[in-house]
Image (tube, helix red, strand yellow):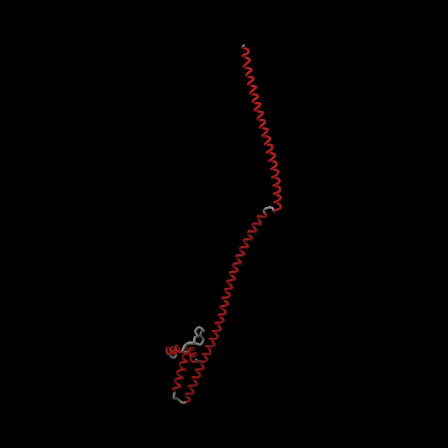
Length: 222
């Protein structure tokens, strides 16, 4: 497992990598990568050199002093690899914490956005209510001005009573006028009848006078 982690670190290159790039790479993929890249560079090269040195050290027929020296070199290289792995793990943990922090920030931002949308919607409603209230007030003011131009109810009732009295008086006057007119009609009818009778009497008198005049010459001739 340690070798896999070390090789995975070497596979990624520099230990200062993003958490999105840090993945657990299978051993088969690591071996293929090493075969393709050869000695590689950086941590890859250290691990390849360590593996080659270990293989050489196991198969070396040298003296114990040379073997011990080679062993110390391998330990130094291994310590360097472990140090790099530790740095990588620290960066990994730090990136995890950063991701959690970013998720919290993102969640807070989403909540703030939702809250802002709700506040905007509420403000729009408040604006609509304010517009409606303003419109109602303008209508009320216009109506109040119209009402102020007319007398109040008490004054209106007084005017109605006065108009009612005046109407009653005019009604009485009309009745009196109608009665006088009817009387005048009757009188005029009587007058017309009298004139007609008088005219008839005059006509009769004229006829009588004419008859008398016609009879007088006849009597004188006899």
